[in-house]
Image 1 (cartoon, rainbow, N blue to C red):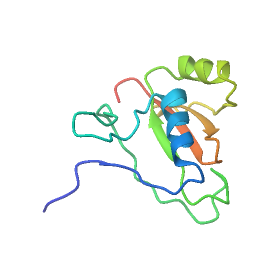
Image 2 (cartoon, rainbow, N blue to C red):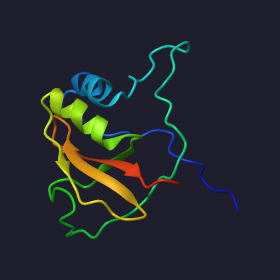
Image 3 (tube, rainbow, N blue to C red):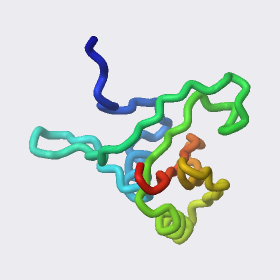
Image 4 (cartoon, rainbow, N blue to C red):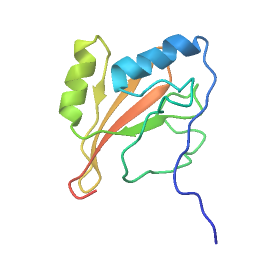
Length: 122
C-alpha cells in the first residue's frame, strides 16, 4: 500500500499573509515561500510527526481555532528565551516523561502553536 511520506506544506488563510509569513520567519526561522525556481523552501529536519485529531470540545488549544501547529525544536529553553526576548508571550507546559517538553504560544493572528522538544532518543 502506498502512503504519504510527510507534510509537503501547510496552507491556511490569513488576514495579512505577507506580514504573517515574515513573523514566522523572524520568530521561528521558517523560510518564506519561494517565488522563483532558484529559491528554496523551508527544509524541515526529519523526526517524528504526530497527526492527531482532537475532540471538538478539547481545551488543549483555543476553542475558536480548528487546528494548532506543532513544531519540533532542539532546545526548548533557548527557543523560549529567544521568543520572550522578542516580546512574544510563551506558556511552558509540564514535561511529559518519555515524550518531551512543550510550550504554547500564538502567532499574531491568534493561531495556537505548540513547541515540542522530544525526549532524548526521539
